[in-house]
Length: 113
Length: 115
Image (cartoon, rainbow over all chains, first blue to last red; front, side, top):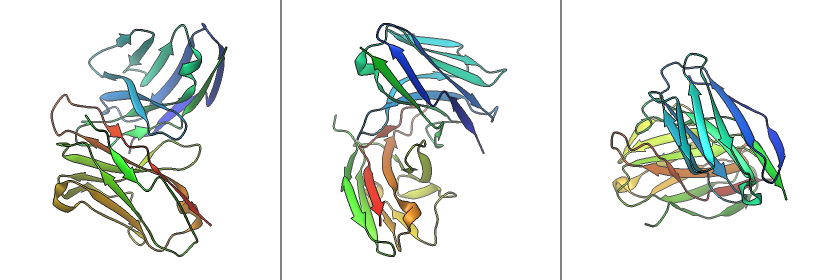
């Protein structure tokens, strides 16, 4: 089955700086890569996703890049704000409408005001 | 649109007791997932339903866990008997069965503590 590794496990940045979280996956058949944000006591919430036919996607301060050859993808958050503090999970899936998501182990991001 | 509802939010039981969790997915979502999230880890799939049929239950410990989705809407997940290692957050998620509709919507989860 799919194996997703995520680094770093914790990340602290100053407000206004950028944060980068990296993930690798093992199954070349995976074609959908979402990123979820999980705040304390809540379920994961999708913040951005990318499919394997696209190399980069951006939504305001958040961007995701995908390198299919190397089987890795990254989340970039620019101009970080204290409300960005949360646990972020990457995931991978093949045919996500039918199959489940394989999650990374999470990155706890702390934005220091 | 209402989100995925789960209850209870918290549950504390002793080992060998039984427990049940309930999930109400977003209206119209045909696919329902139960994930187990152990502290400090990412969610891991336990079982996936498509309407009221099971699509994938390969990671469900069937000797103690069971799940059903009556009439293809609400779902219950049961653990009997519970073990200490079952302490985790149990997340329910739902999604539509449509090509290009990828997002899984998660509920707030049920935090189970087994003493």
